[in-house]
Length: 543
Image (tube, rainbow, N blue to C red; front, side, top):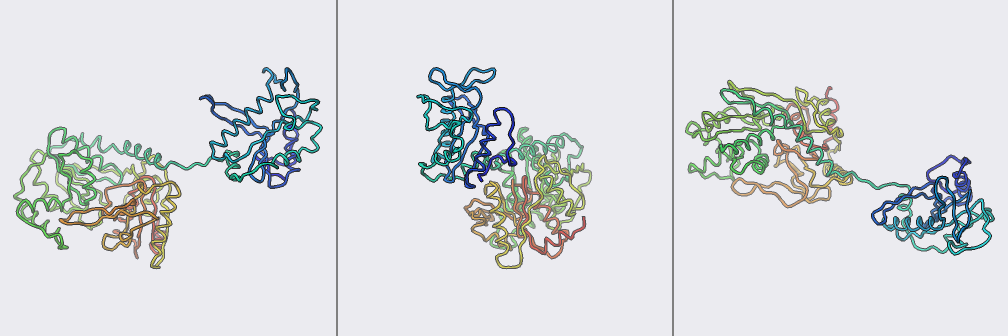
């Protein structure tokens, strides 16, 4: 038996009206054709001709085992011949030329097949007159393409024989999908990312909008705000306002990648540096020549700066200290010496992102502002963070993007187990339409201990990794897929974050904070490549 599309429960019901004939013939085809034939009924079609959209309907359409088409136009009721034309009367409409109707359908279907890269499909069309006997022939439509009432007992044989001369090997599956209106759709990840970023940026502008409006006599402000709350936008707003007012501004953070990121977005006259780079500049200006081949060079630079902090000249109207949880009180006090007496100090941080066990500090007389709203992370990622109790205070999911819970890819203790899990994760992302430029692979380990940092390729893509060059500067290898450490990527974000090399023997506060930092980097999706033992510890963590 032939396969019917869309499926109907056999035996096919005989209804009144025009559709009665179609159902009757459909049943004949179902029973009379082999199971390698497919029959479609009531197919609607649309095409565009001369910028005008045309519509129509195919009564029955037969697909041969080879992937060719026979269109069956069925006419019952008031069919008659007039002035050399076969006509059919329709209520409230003028009679229609059946020959022209079949011709238009034939041409439209051929054009649509060509556009769908199915031009090898051969298309024939039969006019079926189950209630009429054809007594003579006319020029408007060939007799051999008409099946009348006298031939209905051989109906299925006529259908099968119509394919006897067809040749070629079209893609039959593609044809069936085309006729079934199985649109091959893939979500445009780029468009989704743009929408999420636009909405997130707009929603997280709160800090940047109202914090600068707060006024206090000593001009010292501490902003204790969670990941994704808009601290970066606030910093940029402060820096841009200072530039507009012809004021000199200094932005200082802990991470070099974040400093470079801010420098690329801030006004050109803004100084955006890490604390250690600031110490380096100061040391060189005062006759020191640091040796960056020495592992302890940054500690030495810090000592030079701190030893002479009481000699620092106040020269900045605005000082923004970001990632303050990674600073100690002495560093902040030294930087404060470079601020003019009427200057403003903003200290931005999040104790839950303290990865270096720095002691918390306070600034006497400062205005303290707190925010637990996360506008960056998908709602289900925030829910996972709260469920795992990674931080003491629950954060509030404010993103408009619900998203998905973090994907989990576990790895064992074998030599290549982690690399296999990472590749599986990345290949799944490519299959979903994600581009390498939309992904950052973030390793749980540091630069020196990471195996991922040694990979020239991951997921079949060339990796782009940070490498240290002369004079303490950093460069990037050439590649498409960025790999970063969780420490260096703190303060930044990406549409999709693959957090890998996650492994620990206990869920300590430091390990929990590293998880929190990594999981809050993704704007649309977060994937975790985690060891089996670490995953077991997380699953056992009380809710």
